[in-house]
Length: 396
Image (cartoon, rainbow, N blue to C red):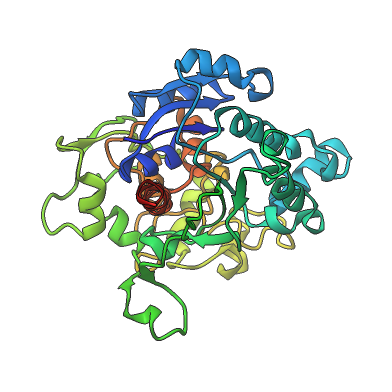
């Protein structure tokens, strides 16, 4: 079995995806202690540690792992300055251009681990803006550094090649009930074997006739229709499923390794009384500004900048991107048929976490862990192609 480590591992969405593809997670590094505990709980073979990767030399982590080489490294260096929301937030707090934010250089720490462990192949995932932000300066620098690794001992030639073109994958095209785009930069040793990005498996919105022959997209209803019926004052984490028959294919996938009739983390945030008065007026797919003025006045926001401050999900469509902001109030993720926001488990289902995956921490912690994760099913598709690459190398 091929071993991998996950840097900036978070709760472990990407790790879970690679394990679904047949890999063995032996390590993870995460800055937040509570989140690291979630990763460790759900990846039993992993030496998961919490701490600042900038203060953990790769040789020290190798000592803790008891290995000096791994087959695969995955990870997503934090990207607050590459997203539109993060860019504005950091400017407002620091008053400095985001190009000066030290977190932009965290990918260099990731590459220090690559240089030390020399994996056969590695994957950097990030927001799509990683490719274009600052006119591509950071992206081009990353590629240049990657392709220079090992050149000092290899006759001036780097040992890695970045598989081009680097692709942005939309999770909805791979069976995840959510529109979520992530950049996947894949680099591997110069073996004469190419890596192939995963082919689309599900149709959503393209005009391409061939795409329309694929499986239909997975909807929010497909994803959460069997989960326990709760109210927003419900505080029992482990609850019985609401149905056990006539399950959708997606529900069966999520429940596959959970033999219990109960599921954890199925609690949601308590909405305030004004929000509860507004929710019944919202149709599926509607946003805050679709409401009549007199209803908006019940829960007033600045209407010039918060036009979609409230959004109700559609039962027969995929969700929009589940962000870490769901940990703040959840108003952008109102349940399609109930007058409350999504529970942690419902959000996890939309992210494609298997039901046996348990999140550790308080309610906000768990929401944030879900929102920051790579959807496991997307990670699985990438992992399957990484596996195909390694197997081809073995035969080459």
